[in-house]
Amino acid sequence: MSERLYDLATLQDIGGDDPAFMKEMVEMFATITPDTLIDIKQAIQTENWQQVGSIAHSLKANLISYGISGMKEIILQLESCSSNEHPRAFALDNFAILEDVCSRAIQQMLEDYMLK
Image (cartoon, helix red, strand yellow):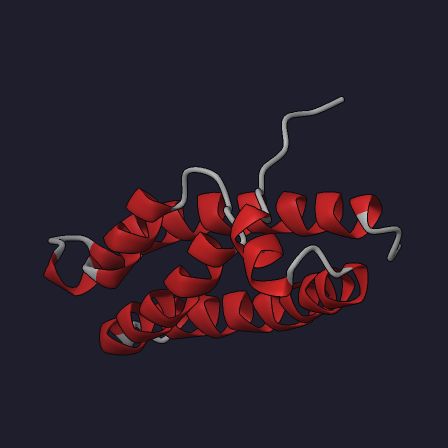
């Protein structure tokens, strides 16, 4: 069994361990996050660094709530990519990590909550 890339303890505290609530929250994350990642990628491709930072900032709260492992530093890097000397390469490298981890975490959640 592979390492869990998420921890829904915060959501379980909010939802009182209600299975229907948890399923709904997993479905919502699995639906919204891929679209958010597409938005970040498009902002990187058009070199709209303010938008990259803004979208990354909005994603940060979800990643924390869903306990997505190790993404705090990546999000902080994306939020600040406009201050980097080579923002495109910098953003693409960080985005690739973010996209990979989020995709695998979503896959794990869907399997764990029997939604796939």
